[in-house]
Length: 284
Image (spheres, rainbow, N blue to C red):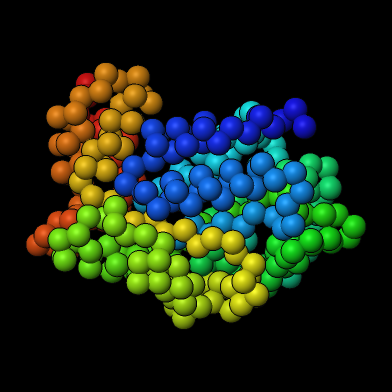
C-alpha cells in the first residue's frame, strides 16, 4: 500500500478551501464523504460520487483534488483509472466489446489494489450497456469473480443536471439571497438533479440501473461561477505559472469572459475554462 498517502481529513479540507472556488456545497459533501470512507477500515460498499454541473465549474478539478489527497502521485498514480466517454468508447456499435474490456479492467485493477479509483468523464454521453456493466461493482458488499470492491472509489462526471442547478442559483440571486444559502436540500436539489438525469440525459444515465438502484452515494451539484470566482481562478493560474499574482489583471481577465443572462451578466458561461489561455494575453 505504499502508493497511498496516510489519509488526513485536515489536509483535504485545506486543499478544498485553497484551490476550489465558489463551491461550498461541493467542499462540504466531498470532505465529509471522502473522510468518512477513507477512515472506515471496513466499508460496506465502494464510495460512489456523481459530480454534476455545467462546463468549467470544477468537476475534473475536484476529482484531481480527491486523488492527490489519497495517492502519493495523485491523478498520475497507476491506480487512478480515467475514462472519457467519447475518447475511450467512441463507437456505439462496439459497446459490447468495450463492456467486456471495461469489466475485466476494473476487476483486475481492484484485485491487485483494493483502493483503486475510477473516474468516468462525460457520463451523460456514455452508452447504457457500458454503465450497466459498472453496476455490480457498486452494490453493498459487492463481490465479482471473488473480488471485493468495498474499498474502491468511483467518480462520475457529468453535465447532466446543469440546467437545474443553474435555475436554483438564479432563483437565489434574483431573490437577493446569498449563494452560500443554497444547500443540498434547497428545493430538494439532490432529488431534482437525479430526476433531471433520468428525464433528459442523452446517454446511458437516463436508463441506468445505477440511478434506479440507488447505488450513487452522493449527487454533488457544482454551482455556476460568478465574476469573483473566475478572478480567483485567474490568481490561482498565475501562481501555477510562477507569475506574481496581480489582482487587477485577474479581474480584467474575469471580466473578459462571457457571462449570462445577457443583461445581468451573473454567471460565467464557461466557468474557469479558458482562464489560462486568456491570462497569457496579459503578459509578455
